[in-house]
Image (cartoon, rainbow, N blue to C red):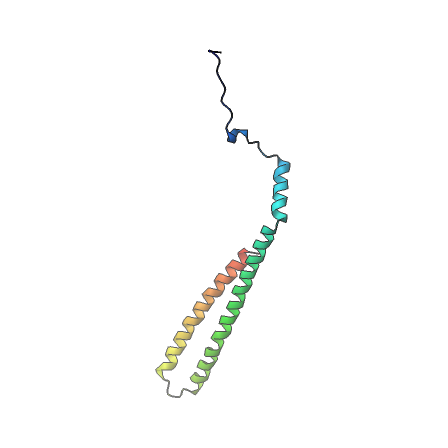
Length: 112
């Protein structure tokens, strides 16, 4: 016994067996059928719907001042400087809303 070498026990990493294709398939089916994927899909769909609803709400909110500015412009016989300031501000709001809409649609297209 004095000259015998003792082999060390295998580590836990080397004791692990590789998964077979069948067990990998079973794991994939389990993930696909689990509530986690369905819950994730539902959450993303809900957030997209919220963003679309917010976008529609913001669009409706912008239409009222645009309509009012049009009425004021039609009644402005003196060509007051405030009309131009309002028009400039509304154009900035339209550009901001357009950027927001693009972001919402990009996210929506990615999640299809």
